[in-house]
Length: 302
Picture 1 (cartoon, one colour):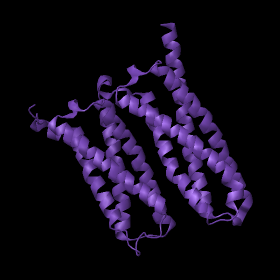
Picture 2 (cartoon, rainbow, N blue to C red):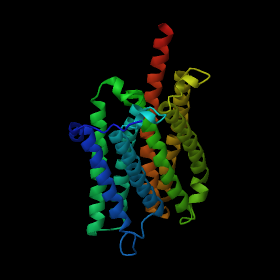
Picture 3 (tube, one colour):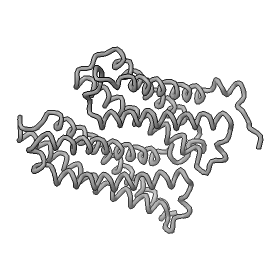
Picture 4 (spheres, helix red, strand yellow):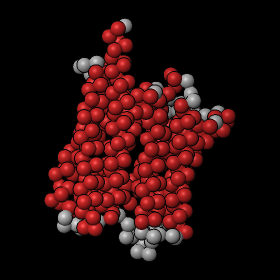
């Protein structure tokens, strides 16, 4: 099959330019952060968050580069995935995860007093990468609905937001678990809440991954039940689980407040971040459930 290369005008299109921007800024970001792996720089930072940020930058750099190359050589039609849903998911999730990485990395730098030139440059580069993915999201959202796919609709964006919330919970929970070894008072107060929340987060992340994979692979027609009913059931389960997890988060904050000086300041910050992410994800599941119920009601009256 002959390779069809883009015309000259396509190399100046907004989508081509913004993806080039993403690749360049992503490469600069993880290169700068990789150069900071020395005892003088950021060696004392939380290793979980450092790995989390590095994974985000490297993963989306690689994925964006592949999408960029496939768009240029016009091979995307040979891939057994929904291309419009894949590009929209990559752009939106890249923007959300880039925002998380920028906030977490800046928090680590300020928390440990890092003021090096490379450190500040890496934080700025991460913010620029976030702006690049946000720009691609805007460009894709301005296209016609048939070119955006399901993930470009409001319910699809909510699915991505749910996945974002679950992915952010992974390093947060790991850091809290790691911090338990540093505070002898934490296990007896927070242990059972932590493991219940972790189980709920794991179930919700698995449901989000299954939903995204089915949509990207155009596998909805192969389900033995209508896929919209599966989505409604997943949203209902997500609302219930995140409702309990959010209540547990607020309970942990109150318990840590009662401990006073016996609680480590870093642990309190982690619990607050977990509460914020859980609340946002709960809101996403609640709105998504409303969309799913409305869709089922419209189809039942059709």
